[in-house]
Image 1 (cartoon, rainbow, N blue to C red):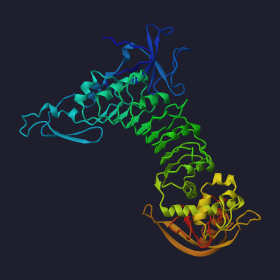
Image 2 (image 1 turned 45 degrees about the vertical axis):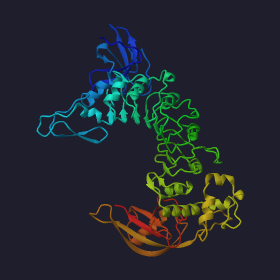
Image 3 (image 1 turned 180 degrees about the vertical axis):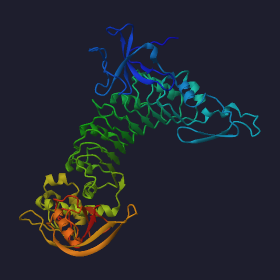
Image 4 (image 1 turned 90 degrees about the horizontal axis):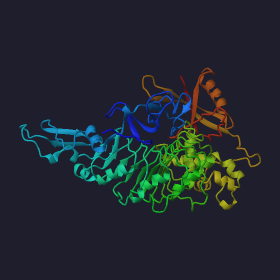
Length: 547
């Protein structure tokens, strides 16, 4: 029977089976100067085509992905509409109901990495086991990613008999055009707990007539599917016990607060590469009562604006936040996150505010976000938090005094501190009250500058051991006196004289606080002073000569 095609169909172009190329039909008609009917397609592989729907200077169709997409014109004989899910499973694994004829014990590894062991023959090689030992009755994972699945093929009741143990199905990057196809598959596989529909281009139609829900589904992946968030919510509502959802690489234009009752049990939501530029869009997810993890990787977020009062900000149970690859530029935006009461894990790579080579940056994040236990995938020990908090107090002590703070906690009141300082340093007041007692703090209240003072430091030379990768040895040189107002570049010059090495010798400097000698901080900026890095009397300076 000849296949028929309409605009919007998902099609396989070229080789049959599993080796063709997927596309969406955008045009059917004549091309000027060419005989016969031509079919214009937009390729899933964005680099495959040679144009964007035009021929001889005339545009015949418009790509969905105008920026990066590509198209071609092909003949009907090269198009196929795809195959049924049963045929795809048989091609991917083996025919339904087949008993492998190898002798003795067969070890079959499915895509989930789980080993299934069963017998096909008795040891004498003659007596076959019953049909109820067929492979499909034991399969738990079905992975049909990149297979040209387009429809169910058969009835859902057949799937129930054939695949009673399947809990995961991957239908990503297929030829499914309508959400009702995976709905029918779920009806026939009632034990599925996880489904992946990513990298498809299907329509959401007539969901209001679907009365069946799928309470066992807890994980739903729907990345790069060209759905609106409203359509995504409509599909997600089929899964009342959904805990993990991914809607990455989709548009969130027209985003609204999820209606009451929607996604109430959702714990993890991935929204990476969704072109989110305004935190007000993110804030709409703050009303999800169970949300624990939010992935905002590679969006365009430049600022984080949360209400200072913690009563209306939402995200009451958020524990992990991934903000890597955004445009956060200053501490004021990052400090807004200190009001999230359970935020304990944050990823901040590749933001303008970040200096990942600086231990000081890590210390500041730790001090500014009081509930963190993991920063950029690295745990924060209690000792590191205390050390970071002490350094933070010292770093901004001058600003604290200017803002109305004092060098003592006696009679100290938050109401007397400048609001602008508290907004930029929301944790400083509490840290100062908890940790400042007995701390050596000084500032010149007349000039507003930290007093330059003579300090005595221990100098240590570190050398790498030849032939021992990653190992080094240290030698104590001497104790010397220097001004805390010296810049790092001047300290380096002093070290060349002390160590009798050429001034051109590359070196890196680090310091260890005498209170916490197990921690080491880089003096990475030649223009900053020792006081800027809070180097104090009896601290240690480590000199590392570079090769």
